[in-house]
Image 1 (cartoon, rainbow, N blue to C red):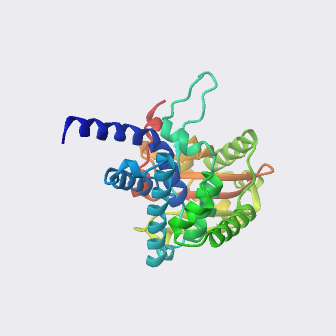
Image 2: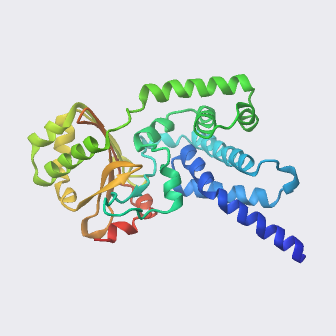
Image 3: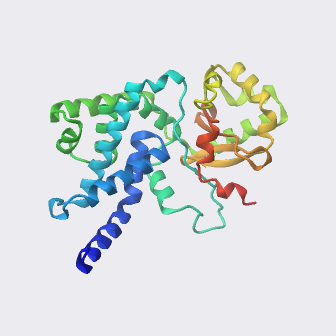
Length: 306
């Protein structure tokens, strides 16, 4: 490689890195998996490094659509393998510490900030998981990243009209199923009330903060598929919370995809992450990730800090 080619390659790599946070966010929105999103970004880099830069008019747009295409292939592979046979699936959460009002800047990296810029809560990520691959592609790329329908249609191998219809169907499903934007102060109060009641084994206090029709979804991963389950109703969910009181006693309030939840870490080892949906001061939904392999891959260094 000549010195000129080496300099051009280094410049391209540097320009790619400026787009990495955006691309990782696209991958996460598409796949709900931080590890798979990172793999998609790396694959985009390999494709870029084998492409003549003169063929690319808009690098950010080109990379976004390439990541979208890689993710679409992954979603189609999932569907073919029927990964939903395991039942409940909770997307990877993005964990950040609860803001300290005394600090003007918060301890989170630029990639975490990019992932959370749209405040896409975990419950909404679950809704995205219910979309067909083409619907998710159209909705994520167009509605979240303003990619033109014509470019998305080329990625999906469909007509522009069909792509618009996919986005419209996805939009209707998201609007119908997505929870309302939370009032973070009231949401925190409800989560802390649940946490306290679980720690103290107070069944009545749990009932008071749970919506009568509350839904709990627990994902323990592929190694323990029998534990994956959905629980419905305040009494059932409250009774389940009491059985895990010892974990609540060693839990810590955190932000889960930008809203309040908590991480249970008995003995300093992360056991589960709970994300909450709160409507009118009542908890209507709890999403629990207790897949130990996936939890071990999360960046939780801040949990070790006092």
